[in-house]
Length: 212
Image (cartoon, rainbow, N blue to C red; front, side, top):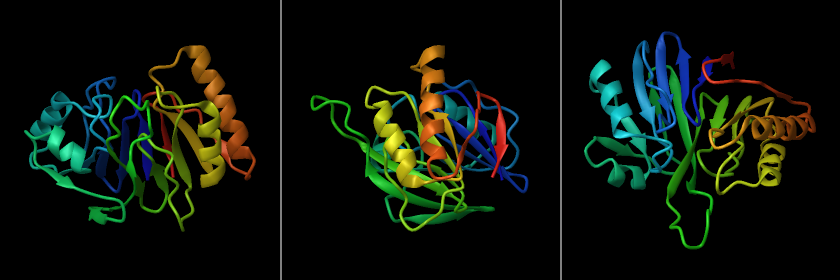
């Protein structure tokens, strides 16, 4: 299974000629030349994780591709046919087995409503929590996509998240709000955290891939 990180929070996962897209948002360049798109997962309704333009473009190139997200996404993306997924749900899309965790977005501030959010585990190997620190229970994560920069995020909490998940490898995501220096600092902190349990950090700039 090959994972490509795109700008900010978008991931493209490829297995056996089929493709899964996760969180194509407002900071992400158009995702083109995808092969065998079998599904789109949106972890929550915030625009840095999905846009109507991305969904329209993807569905034009790949008609009838199903879209999945929590109830908040179903309401926010009312012009699209979005299937509701919730924590505890699982489904199969081609070669991909998906399991969903969590339930709520991390708190930004008491003045800002907390929205629905799901983390997604792909093929018992790749875990992406959306905008949360939800730890997938009773599973060993081989590759963790760890948020590293956000209005709701403190780097110490991100480090604790990596320590709790204990993945084999981790890479930084949700990073478009950071400067170059901020990304470097975040990478060094996540590196320390993953190494505490014998894992390693993967430097994955936008457009770069890694296998899992």
